[in-house]
Length: 278
Image (cartoon, rainbow, N blue to C red; front, top):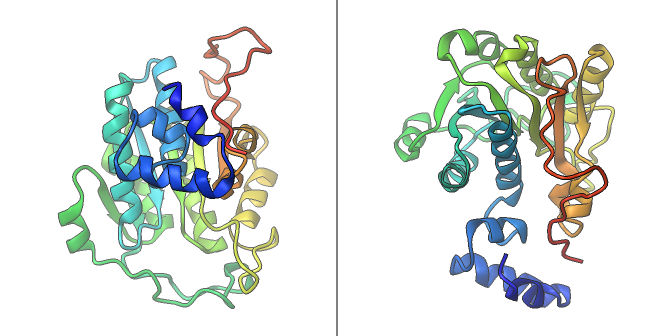
């Protein structure tokens, strides 16, 4: 990491924000530097992809898959492609990228658990043909998410999943997406990095743990003894000024054959530190 970065960023918030914008606009410093200080588009995507690639490399997986649930106009997939291009230069790991979407926008909300007071049927409709023309590597999986999840591994022969981005808005759709974890553990890394888009909202939405993605997570954990979706508690230390630090989770498969394989590179108590922008 360049020695100039701590000096540039050890200022009050307005100057810090301007510094980030300038670094991002002119692609100053290395990709890793820009990712660490969030001077890059969708740093939350970059973080999850980076950590998935690092884990895959330490476990000697040559290829991993990444999934985005809820693609809409496709900006998330395009951004993920950018991060992946950078990461394939840093790690001996190749990526496959898949985007799951109905293609028809949001379905009708089933009940209050889908935040029917906030989301409207048909929002975020996809122009799949146009999006495909813009994508370089991502493959679109179009259809009802419960059905496409059940057939995904058989139809696509995907490499083990290391990263998942959730942006389906609804409780019902998110719960359907979690059926992907019913597949054999060989289809996943022992820990999968996850981002949930819809767990922080405004005073109209009023996100809560009794509906939406948070309820789907809670029910998944209740129903699975050795598979859990847990908050990534490193994030709020590493990125204390970033709202998305509260939206990063990890799927743990405690019975995965490689869950207990040692992957740390330092003695216990010597923790890696990322730049914390206070």
